[in-house]
Image (cartoon, rainbow, N blue to C red; front, side, top):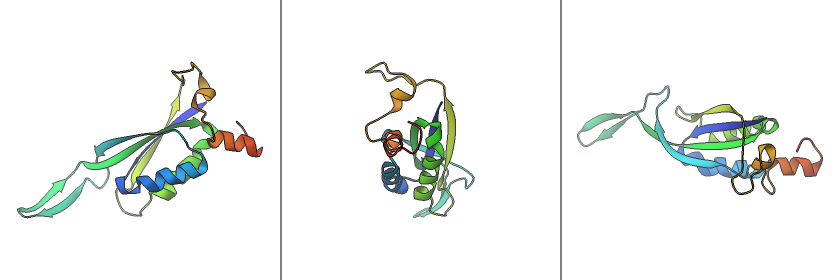
Length: 131
Protein backbone atom coordinates (compact mmCIF):
# COMPACT_ATOMS: atom_id res chain seq x y z
CA UNK A 1 0.00 0.00 0.00
CA UNK A 2 1.10 3.57 -0.55
CA UNK A 3 0.46 6.77 1.35
CA UNK A 4 0.36 10.46 0.53
CA UNK A 5 1.99 12.88 2.90
CA UNK A 6 0.67 16.42 2.63
CA UNK A 7 2.79 18.82 4.68
CA UNK A 8 1.97 22.51 5.00
CA UNK A 9 5.07 24.39 6.13
CA UNK A 10 6.53 27.88 6.43
CA UNK A 11 8.09 29.16 3.21
CA UNK A 12 11.36 29.97 4.97
CA UNK A 13 11.77 26.33 6.09
CA UNK A 14 11.30 24.83 2.62
CA UNK A 15 14.97 24.51 1.62
CA UNK A 16 15.82 22.86 4.94
CA UNK A 17 12.95 20.38 4.52
CA UNK A 18 13.78 19.68 0.86
CA UNK A 19 17.46 19.08 1.64
CA UNK A 20 16.65 16.81 4.60
CA UNK A 21 14.21 14.78 2.49
CA UNK A 22 16.75 14.40 -0.29
CA UNK A 23 19.30 13.09 2.24
CA UNK A 24 17.01 10.23 3.24
CA UNK A 25 16.17 9.42 -0.39
CA UNK A 26 12.90 11.23 -1.04
CA UNK A 27 13.30 12.13 -4.69
CA UNK A 28 9.79 12.86 -5.96
CA UNK A 29 7.57 15.55 -4.51
CA UNK A 30 5.27 18.37 -5.58
CA UNK A 31 5.18 21.81 -4.01
CA UNK A 32 2.38 24.36 -4.18
CA UNK A 33 2.00 27.84 -2.79
CA UNK A 34 -1.04 28.00 -0.50
CA UNK A 35 -2.56 30.43 1.97
CA UNK A 36 -4.28 29.45 5.16
CA UNK A 37 -4.76 29.84 8.84
CA UNK A 38 -4.58 27.49 11.76
CA UNK A 39 -4.93 27.81 15.50
CA UNK A 40 -3.08 31.10 15.64
CA UNK A 41 -5.69 32.74 13.38
CA UNK A 42 -3.15 34.88 11.54
CA UNK A 43 -0.87 37.68 12.62
CA UNK A 44 -1.19 41.36 13.50
CA UNK A 45 1.00 43.74 11.53
CA UNK A 46 1.78 47.37 12.22
CA UNK A 47 1.55 49.75 9.28
CA UNK A 48 1.48 53.51 8.71
CA UNK A 49 -2.25 53.65 9.21
CA UNK A 50 -2.25 51.46 12.32
CA UNK A 51 -2.43 47.76 12.98
CA UNK A 52 -4.24 45.21 10.88
CA UNK A 53 -4.90 41.49 10.96
CA UNK A 54 -3.56 39.16 8.26
CA UNK A 55 -5.47 35.91 8.64
CA UNK A 56 -4.50 33.98 5.50
CA UNK A 57 -0.76 33.42 5.72
CA UNK A 58 1.43 32.19 2.85
CA UNK A 59 2.69 28.63 3.22
CA UNK A 60 4.02 25.85 1.00
CA UNK A 61 2.28 22.52 0.61
CA UNK A 62 4.49 19.51 -0.07
CA UNK A 63 2.91 16.37 -1.51
CA UNK A 64 4.85 13.13 -1.35
CA UNK A 65 3.55 9.68 -2.31
CA UNK A 66 5.57 6.79 -0.90
CA UNK A 67 5.52 3.26 0.45
CA UNK A 68 3.91 2.65 3.84
CA UNK A 69 7.17 1.56 5.42
CA UNK A 70 8.80 4.92 4.59
CA UNK A 71 6.11 7.14 6.09
CA UNK A 72 7.39 7.41 9.67
CA UNK A 73 10.98 8.21 8.67
CA UNK A 74 9.73 10.83 6.22
CA UNK A 75 7.41 12.42 8.79
CA UNK A 76 10.20 12.54 11.37
CA UNK A 77 12.47 14.20 8.80
CA UNK A 78 9.86 16.85 7.94
CA UNK A 79 9.19 17.53 11.62
CA UNK A 80 12.87 17.99 12.42
CA UNK A 81 13.55 20.27 9.45
CA UNK A 82 10.34 22.33 9.55
CA UNK A 83 10.06 22.94 13.30
CA UNK A 84 10.99 26.43 14.48
CA UNK A 85 9.17 26.09 17.79
CA UNK A 86 6.87 29.00 17.00
CA UNK A 87 3.16 29.01 16.25
CA UNK A 88 2.44 28.51 12.59
CA UNK A 89 5.13 25.89 11.89
CA UNK A 90 2.57 23.87 9.94
CA UNK A 91 0.76 20.57 9.86
CA UNK A 92 1.11 17.14 8.25
CA UNK A 93 -1.72 15.01 6.87
CA UNK A 94 -1.32 11.36 5.83
CA UNK A 95 -3.76 9.78 3.38
CA UNK A 96 -4.10 6.29 1.91
CA UNK A 97 -3.47 6.14 -1.85
CA UNK A 98 -5.62 3.66 -3.70
CA UNK A 99 -3.65 3.48 -6.96
CA UNK A 100 -0.64 5.08 -8.65
CA UNK A 101 -0.08 4.99 -12.42
CA UNK A 102 2.94 6.49 -14.18
CA UNK A 103 1.60 8.02 -17.38
CA UNK A 104 4.78 7.63 -19.48
CA UNK A 105 5.27 3.89 -18.86
CA UNK A 106 1.90 2.68 -17.63
CA UNK A 107 3.59 1.27 -14.51
CA UNK A 108 1.22 0.78 -11.60
CA UNK A 109 1.54 0.57 -7.86
CA UNK A 110 4.92 0.53 -6.17
CA UNK A 111 6.89 0.54 -9.45
CA UNK A 112 5.16 3.77 -10.49
CA UNK A 113 6.52 5.68 -7.48
CA UNK A 114 10.10 4.37 -7.58
CA UNK A 115 12.95 6.63 -8.70
CA UNK A 116 16.64 5.97 -9.17
CA UNK A 117 18.44 6.36 -5.82
CA UNK A 118 15.19 6.88 -3.89
CA UNK A 119 14.49 5.79 -0.33
CA UNK A 120 13.27 2.32 -1.41
CA UNK A 121 16.29 1.74 -3.66
CA UNK A 122 18.66 2.67 -0.83
CA UNK A 123 16.94 0.27 1.58
CA UNK A 124 17.01 -2.56 -0.95
CA UNK A 125 20.68 -2.03 -1.83
CA UNK A 126 21.73 -2.03 1.82
CA UNK A 127 19.76 -5.22 2.42
CA UNK A 128 17.82 -3.67 5.28
CA UNK A 129 14.28 -4.26 4.28
CA UNK A 130 11.56 -4.03 1.73
CA UNK A 131 11.90 -2.67 -1.72
